[in-house]
Image (tube, rainbow, N blue to C red; front, side):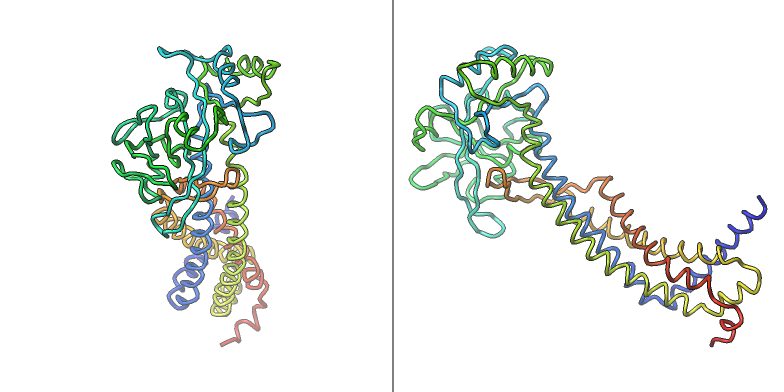
Length: 399
């Protein structure tokens, strides 16, 4: 026990002397800390894009809500349902009912071009045609400005995300796309969900303006309870009148986010890994400089009875502390610079814009600090091994 205490005391003493010598090599130390901070800031910043995008998709569906598409369709864009099919779906067992009948909404959507506020370039924005129960079959939907559009009229409501990212969507303005015009009557929120990226209008008006006949692309429904999903699904998939696929809304939106989140995560980790390689070399340079500047000190400590293991551990601790300091700095920069930042990107499943907010979570911050610690350990291990292998007599003769 006494030996362990003595060893820890040696480690603490050597580490303390190392930290006190930082002002003499502040240039190299500052470069290392800033380099690691850059790695962490980039890693956390890029991954916060994927986290924000995934959250926008995940909050869009409740466990007691379902969506029905044409069998084989992986998105609404390639789906198609007739009016008669949507009626059969609305009459299926398990669907909740309100004062106006089954809580279902047969929907279709088209892509329109609108300029982004930030760049002025035209991007694809979804214009969704919905029925009267559209807001009741989704969670967190509410009008935050203006009013709901009137059925049968060329009127639209816009999501808060769309209104913030694209031009011409202020309440009271007229939205003109080609020869078609809609009055923007209101703005809605969806608890940060993907619906906030969309513009909504009456499905029957959209059918007429875009010559879609009496066809739809999906049916959104609210079930009596999550337990009724399987009954609802079995009734539809076994019905010979239909050829459909049935999913919970939460699962459907999660699938829609997979391609994008994988791409962002892969790119983010690849970029951070390349930067981390440079940071490791910076850390190596700093710690080799520290060992070179303290050669006689290390030899003196060895001559006084300090062990190789204590010297090795103290240098690793110093490297780790510098790295964690850089990681904390980078994590703070990422949090204050990115968290909550509103943006939009292309969803490759639908080729339309999705608005969302960057989300810097505790998990991402911890991941960034872990990366910093690994950089510090990789950058400190070789200089530490070199220091503990110094021969005492030659090292004491060095100037």
